[in-house]
Length: 120
Image 1 (cartoon, rainbow, N blue to C red):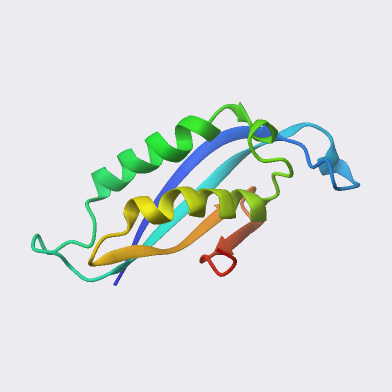
Image 2 (image 1 turned 135 degrees about the vertical axis):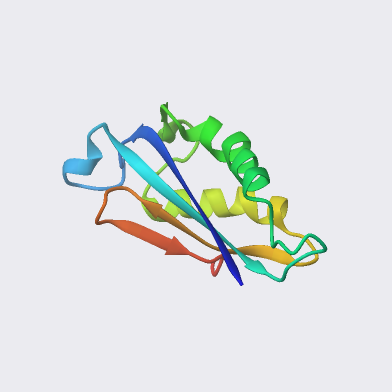
């Protein structure tokens, strides 16, 4: 089974190693999709939605929402943001019955990245 939870945050960045519009300071309303894979526990759930919401809020959204991402990710492409968030969440959600399966980071409604830890 795959559990899915979506989040939104607003943040600014600029791509210092890129030549084009995005090298200038700008912002996005990002969508973050967190997917967990596993089997049901003794409560017949993979993971409590409320617990996951609070974890992502405390570990990711507090750091990203209404912040300048370049302060903690040098080249904050969607790819690098996805890897950064994966590295924060993967060890925190891992349990005997569940693991982080995949995350999606959407910069716009039509442009995003899917990451499943393949570079970790």
